[in-house]
Amino acid sequence: TGFVLALVLILTVSWIFVRQTPFAVDNTFRTLQFVSASLYSLGHGGNDAQKTMGIIAVLLYSQGMLEGEFYVPFWVVITCQAMLA
Image 1 (cartoon, one colour):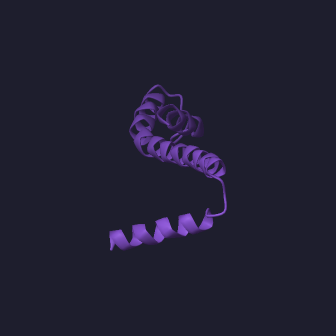
Image 2: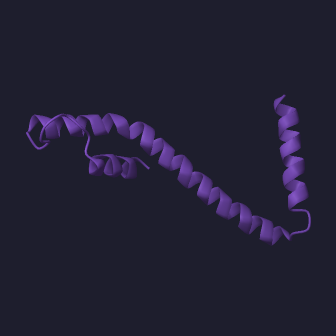
């Protein structure tokens, strides 16, 4: 099943780029690889940052810096995801 899917994908990509120069194809795939790596990195940061977010939120709550009920501030979420991404 995996071999057939890989064969179909490579044939499809080859057919799409058959009339382009190797330089144009290289530039296209470099850009797509950059986008793919960025999204993968953002997903990684979003998943692994949850542990850090929890610790920071507990520390903020225990010091009385979060008013009312317990929650994770948005700035903590963004900061943790960005640092791990």
